[in-house]
Amino acid sequence: MKESLLRLKNSAISLILDTNNQDELEELRIQFLGRNGELTQLLKGLPKVAKEDRPEVGRVANEVKQIIENALMQQGSAAKEQKIKTTLDVTEPGIRPSLGHTHLVTQAITEITEIFERIGFSRVRYPEVEWDWYAFTALNFPDNHPARDDWETFFIDHKPDPKKGTMLLTPHTSSGQIREMVSAVKSQTEGQKAPIEIKMLNIAKTYRRQSDVSHTPMFHQFETLVIGQNISIAHLKGVLDYFVKSYFGSKRTSRIRPYHFQFTEPSFETDVSCGVCDGKGNLPNGEACKMCKEGWLELGGAGMVHPNVLKACGLDPKKYSGFASGWGVERVLTMREGMQIDDIRLLYANDLDFLKQF
Ligand code: DAH
Image 1 (cartoon, rainbow, N blue to C red):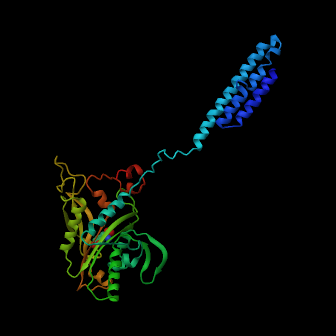
Image 2 (image 1 turned 180 degrees about the horizontal axis):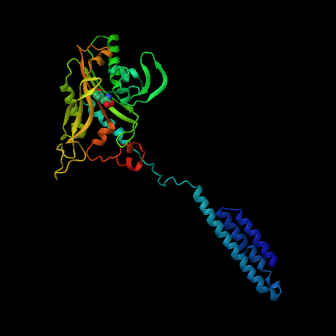
Image 3 (image 1 turned 30 degrees about the vertical axis):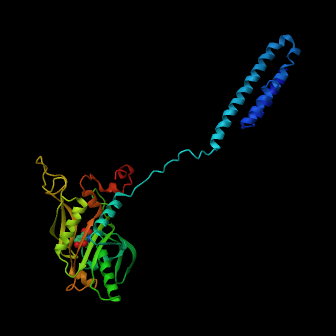
């Protein structure tokens, strides 16, 4: 009897473990533990067991019943879990992908473009891998001029062009001036001879061998070039003022100071009044402003296009004049009021906690 009970238990367990279907498990429960199930049938033979063995057989029978019940229960909940896993609940809310946004330098480029487009400038793009001729020679840099070192240019290991010289990464966006004027002259001689008019905005990557709190080896400049028949310093100052007020706010003012650049004459440094001390250089408590130098922040270079530059591009300096400016995108970005960016390299450190703020 005891052996039969143990055999019954074993066959029940192996059948139970073989299924993960609730209906089949219920059938097995009836087959083994049901009112007319195998266990009951077996126990009908109990009176035939010797009297002294009966308590032991009864204990084993209970144990077998308990074990089968437990096995049915465990297998039942495993089956339930499996069912959950294989069922697709189409009403369950999905996992939202996290949304990014444009980088703050891209945001600044878009904003600068819109500001200049409003007064008729067109954004252009020119190569960032450039020939020396466009980046230096045509911009009135004499051969062996130390400025080629000052710019700490990255040169490309490429056979020099007999006319255009070495290949390099643009150290400034001023090369775009040359590209723009050369192409304007070219399309003029191909078509009819309408006077040349240029209002260019060249925003591009520039590269110099420098890296510290205020420099990154790759940065962006935005270069303006206006060419026409009666362009004067007044136009340059007007555009500078318009940009300063549009980008920094209506309370800010601008000034130009004499300076020297190879490709402009006269040349200027352009400044913006400081937004922290309101251009005064001192704070209300009498302390010197830490943000600026005596109330002004340097924006960058500008000037009237040098006659030699006009000539290099095929324009007659007696007929045409123009102004140009070259300012840094990262620079104007960090000069904005409330922008506390102590280390400009942070812009390109790919630090999401930093970038998410903008
Ligand atoms: N290319 C100069 C630089 O990178 C900036 C500059 C100065 C651009 C005067 C100009 C200009 O167009 O007229 O420092």
